Image (tube, rainbow, N blue to C red; front, side, top):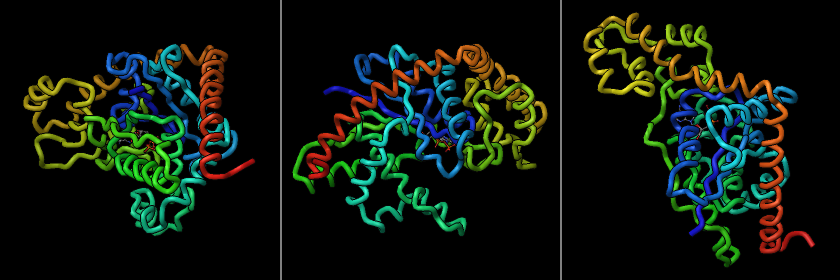
Length: 319
Ligand code: ADP
């Protein structure tokens, strides 16, 4: 069976180490995994999923920044396609069709909706329909493998349900029900306050932080006084340093939070520096970045155009 990999990152703010370890690292690794030789690989900048967080020029800039980030972490445009979700109108068009396949009570169980509601906010319809648009992103390209963080597991189940329903209601075998999703082994990466690291919570360590930013953020990591091992410091530390080494370090420095944080600052900086330098270098050649994006956009446009033609025919839409 032909394999197709697809995933995306929202251009809401700079990606953080949670995005990297939870999802983006896999994008890079899968390029060199023998199991995925010959697979099509698509990495989207999902700006339509971000309309609540960014407006106008800031959105456009943030989207270009994600293209730069993708290249800086090692996504190779000779192997993978980087594209902008809103380059065409096909994704929201497919989402509209899908919105007729799921019920309101079903979507009300979605975690994004529930989280927004729990905050006592009036939930925007875009948040409510987020999983439907995500299903369109995935099913548009018949993706078989979707590397995402564990927080997206539910969205992938909704995608399967939508594929099944479409095939059933139209009596076709059109959408492959994506069987294999690549939930990262790294569970949710906590932020500096111990809650899920997220751009929207402002508790994140950006993936391309400067040494000064790392210092500032690590100093702010919340520690429970009283315990020998500062849990939140350790949870981040184990991402960038071997746990066997960490055991000795944390044993030797029991209760010495400042020393442990200083070691974490050094280790994070060593880890981030090559990404930061690569990004800096790439940012001097923006023509190249735009060219990569243009090629990815054109390639995915052709596929989406062809697929939407077929889908609309099945649905009896258009002429
Ligand atoms: P955010 O939730 O910070 O806005 P995105 O929605 O752009 O980030 O998520 C991009 C990818 O990163 C998704 O696959 C998501 O599952 C993953 N991800 C986001 N936050 C975390 C985290 N704290 N730990 C692990 N993976 C995460």
